[in-house]
Length: 440
Image (cartoon, rainbow, N blue to C red; front, side):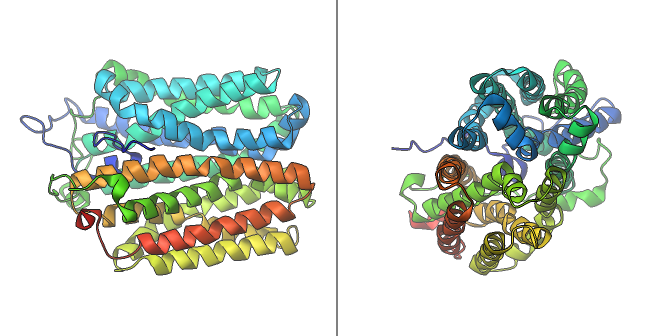
């Protein structure tokens, strides 16, 4: 049985949006405005590093498999590692932050990313490659959890603006790694080891401001948005205080919470299948490796504008099920196109599937709309994401198994399209105008 996460397990999204108890005397002002600017630069640089470990591998997966003797099933395990690490290591982040401070843990996370990416090119076998990847992904998991916590604490008057900057950096790093890995590999001599290892340099650069922030005790209670360069006009981004009463029922007994978890899990499944396998699908259809990377970059880049648009639309609707259905139709159309004409309509399918993958920001928005209290937000977000990421682990693995045993992409694409059905059903149920507190 799944043990419900405790209320102190803040997640990336609730940390950025949920109000925190006021500290004695309120937040202290920064000694100098430039420290806030260093923090803003650190956030942007860290966000750029939270996906390249995943999306840089997809375009070179064929070369990695051939060199390391990796079967399709093992490659499926590799593509399942990211959500597994996010589900497992992410749960430890809040406790580590209480012990050492969020700035120090983000710094350690970036060091783990840099180390893992640096070690991957030296792997002589699959086990070492998986271990190095897991190290990098563990660093991503804790950083992904705690960076929005720091946004809330350091920029309380500019939460919207700084979260937007962080989200933009996340999407930009995702797309850049997918698009640039193959060209950089060619420029560095054609070895996948160089093409993957070069991303350790970006993580090392991001580590510099966090070393300073960790040394100066950047717990996030020292600055405000105004000190960091904000203005009074930015105060509209700060969330209004919410009641702190806990939900009357256990989260595991909430049908709404389970609907949210299933919806989150299947949209995560689609995302990690896309990041891990989509370049290989295009390459097997005759598309070049560099173009396959660009196609993945297009899919990931769709999240940059839509991550700002979808939450605004969702907030104006009483029932978000219509958006769930629309995104699902885009996904089903994209999978059908990949099955019928993968190379001829490659760019169109990439756009359609990129739009479908924007179920992620919609899921985050719905989590906030399905609760009335601060404690409810924390519980629902922690439960939906931890259970959701666990549910997403088998998907990429099953795709790899079907690909190896069928020798083509017909059955895997049918599975991907099949996953879209429970995603739509669960999303429609989760999109109803109700709150988990009312289910008690």
